[in-house]
Structures are given as C-alpha cells and as structure tokens.
Image (cartoon, one colour):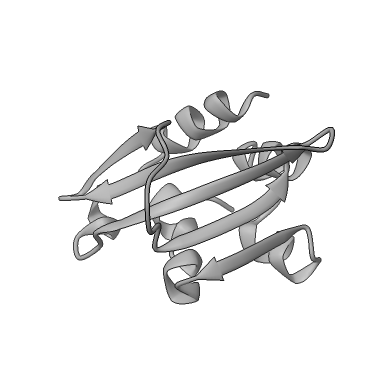
Length: 107
C-alpha cells in the first residue's frame, strides 16, 4: 500500500464529530528502503484534508516504516500498540497523537 493510499484510506474513516474542537496538522513520516517521505493531514473545522506539500510546524509528527503504516490502515495494528512496541515514534503534541484512534476510527 502506498502512503498516498494509506492517507486516503484513513481519511475516509474520518470521524468529524471527534474533531469538533481540533485544529491541527499531523505529519506522517514514512521510512522505506532507506528513504524517508513526509505527508500531512490537516484537521480543521471538522474536516480532514490530505496535504502533500511541506507544511511548517506540524502539531505532531508520527514516524514509522511503510509496513507499520499499512498494518495501522488495515486495522491490523492499533496505533497505541505500534507505539508501545517501538514501531511508531511520536514527536510533538502527544495527547493529539492519542486522538488518532477516535479521529479515524482505528483499532
């Protein structure tokens, strides 16, 4: 699964009710074959938008390899478990990162 597909897939699960008081930019950093790519989701006014251009000052940055992101998007791995197991790292607003599960109905 490509990163673009991952972001499109989770954005389709967006729970606008959970985003009522959230205005944030999530940075997703993906590691694959020694290369790093960065993509963004902007949450604002109860809407979710995938952003492919570099965004300054994301509120939270989440880093993992492509397989971990694919497992999260497929619902096979909860983001919290990925973090606990060391497969996902978080920089920035940690409480905002914890809201991913409710924002995107991830298990």
